[in-house]
Amino acid sequence: ARPAVGCMRAASRVVPACTAAALASVSSTATTATRGSVAMATSADELEMIPGVRRLAETKRVWLLDQFGVLHDGVTAYPGAVDAARRLHESGAKLYVISNSSRRSTNTLQKLAPMGFDPSWFSGVVTSGEVTHQMLASRGKGSTSDGEESDSDDEFWASLGKKCVHFTWSTRGAIPLDGLDLETVTDPEEADFLLAHGTEAINGAGTDDEQRAAGCVDTSLEDMRKVLERAAARNLPLIVANPDIVTVGGDAGLLPMPGTLARWYAEMANHGAVRLMGKPDRIIYDRVLEMTGLEDTPEEAIAVGDSLEHDVAGANEAGVESVFVCGGIHAKELGMRRVASAAEVGDGSGVAPPDREKVLEAAEDHDCEPDYAVPVFVW
Image (cartoon, rainbow, N blue to C red):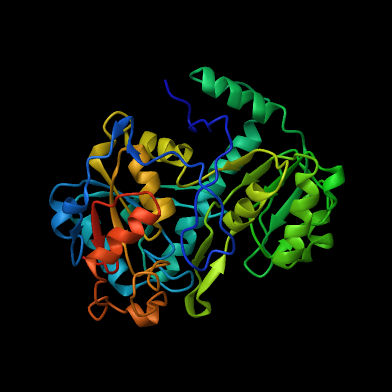
């Protein structure tokens, strides 16, 4: 039987920039987009621009939905997305949220409910924060391996240590670490590894969340870069609970995410292993496909996301068809009017699609191939 959580690759992996707003660039070590072990079948001639997902609902019964930029803008639900999710559920489709959120899965539906999404519409949730939590909690407590590559991964987690510098959130809400047998430190000279959940603060030193909160300090991105430089000199590994480079933030526009730290770290001399715990890595797709029961037939599922680098490229590698939402983080790149805010999107009827050639160019730039493209996620 497969493990409850898919195993990470032994090699570190950092992927290329997703938007012009990315704060740094780095050469890609990502795997070339494939459909599982089979070369991609989609060509430029096969990309289909569609106004909504209604027709796809006739044949696709399992939907893997991204959150930010698809269901909501980080603050408010897109009205058209609420309608689309409801209609998909009523059609008999099974909906799963697959998100590069730093937070655990249980928090996701709690956040979606007040926005207008009925939790009963969703059959499951997998977040990169949940996968991170489970891997940290199980380190050194037995194997999750099913092969030689995974054996190496088990060794990595077992030897990780317990002292970490923790990049976290402050205004967005701190990430709890209690129960993981971790000790946070503020000096990379004392750390065994780095843990990135957020980009607003560095957690205080301590062995419980109360101690950490007392010493948590809001920290600029530039000061975080300096911490990374000191950590790279010691070859410390970096665990990235949210691989996104940027995300939508309502009226605030695009906000930097922990993937930005991963990109910077990967450029530094002598940096340690960089572990991405969410999209585009297979670890999170393996997990959600196990939930759906489609481990052996991933082509029966379809993923919806607004990041070519994370959602589409990750779906490509997992063997899952994809719907690219053009009006999210790539809107400016595609020549669209900025539509990241829910107030601007509305029911989606006023959002014009981008030029198809621009979508193809952007997909080529990010080494991925969406099957379908919609202006925004609507029925």
